Image (cartoon, rainbow, N blue to C red):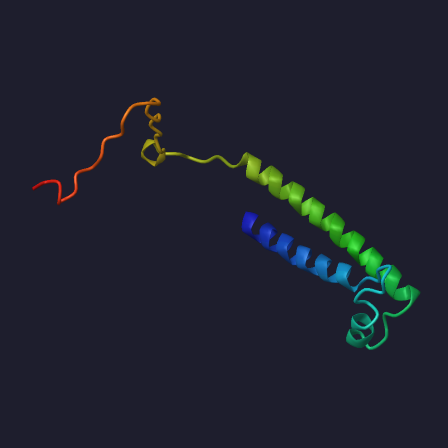
Length: 109
């Protein structure tokens, strides 16, 4: 279930990114050429702005809802950690003490 929702989140994020890039910005953005050519001119003018804005708002709401659901699901999962999986960290030697130097084959002679 978690993986399905995660895939849905990625798909919604990609769709939302595409819709945001299609919207008309103050500098005429990509929507001037891309929207007219991709949709055969059907999404030009005010109708395109309303549709793209509403679709982006819906996708944003779905995105945030999926994020919250995934966060709740992730917080409820328990991880069973074996003692052998735990990494033990040894403290660093005190300042001023020399570290042991491993012997090399040349030193062994």
